[in-house]
Length: 116
Length: 112
Image 1 (spheres, rainbow over the protein chains, first blue to last red):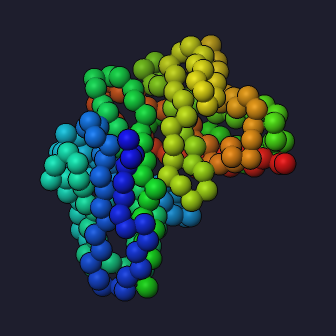
Image 2 (image 1 turned 30 degrees about the vertical axis):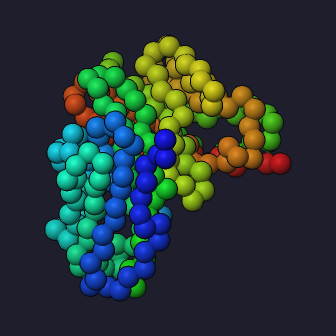
């Protein structure tokens, strides 16, 4: 199993540009999560999907952020327009959720975004 | 979400056991205790979880107090590769709440 795959690993962009981060969850997992990590705020949950449906997007900072999961094997997080304060490491994680059973999350290696 | 409290940092000598404490005095009866760790420049990784009984796996052991208001993650023989930030998280699956809320964790330094 290749694990959760995120691309790109690093992204440097200019303020105002559109940024798209990509995630391929583990096959068979039915929940997907997007997190953002900064020194100041730590790990923050942005949004999560269950069976490709967004369940909780209360962590999405503002309308400039959007996330989609068109199928069970792919998700995107888009920032448009990007701002310097969006600079962070963005992690995608997936998990198998089945009733009250607890299964661990598997995180990707992250995308380090720098907006200049 | 019920809150956990962990020390900001701890140090331990290589090849010695490490006990990482976590307080969760407001834990509910259905909250599971999860531990994750984040190695430098990597995403968090699952370590262990439990409800009431002590748990063991190949990575670590989880000791849960009888009143469940605290727990301890035990690394039996620390190596340099165990240097990481360790997060203690409560999660209640019964409300359909699948998200994990990370706190600030404990930064573990291993001394060679």
